[in-house]
Length: 173
Image (tube, rainbow, N blue to C red; front, side, top):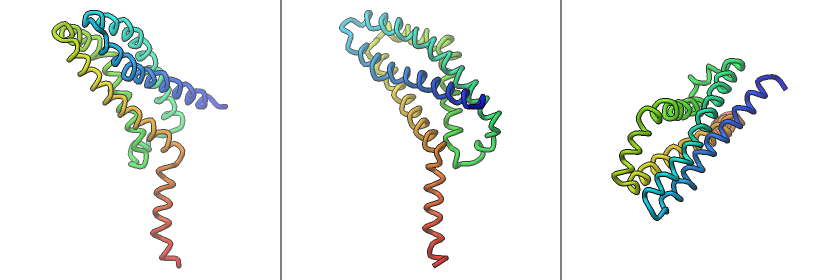
């Protein structure tokens, strides 16, 4: 296997750990926190667990970004960003950019303080808002993953070719 094969494997592992972590926080952690009897306990528990996920999210998004850039460069895939059939390439970069801004810039500089002050005023409403935002991020991430897997296996091209074959068939009959 060439070096790009290892980079692709690292890229996929990074995505699994990163988006899998987002799924765990969204589907398990935030719902468990919402069911805590005491609001103060819920906030402390969430911050403890989320702090560990924050570390994982930072190194996995860095791994995904580095491996994705390497793959794009070494395989010379830059042209795909201009081709609408490869929409999922731009979607991957958009999701990665959004998460990178969240975990490296917004969370440490803005969101941590906003969350703490807002949670002191009403943690239930704050967790409900955070849960809704996490669901949006998770759904967008999963749609991007579906698009990337399907697109990298030619699904969009096969459908397009089949459609063109149906249109062209009567012309050749």
